[in-house]
Length: 68
Image: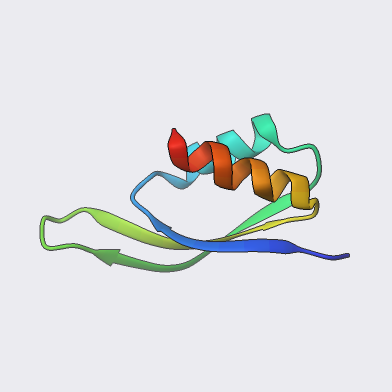
């Protein structure tokens, strides 16, 4: 099965991202946590990879989630 991935850094909780995916994607998806780092102020940053099984879901995530 073809996957359409996106890699990004975020401070948002994984639960928030997974909640958005569950509510807005029409096909399957998976989230991988690749790295965790803390900035000088102590904020936790996560490097995630989100794979989508439908390119339409990937486009919706890029255009909607990052504007939220």
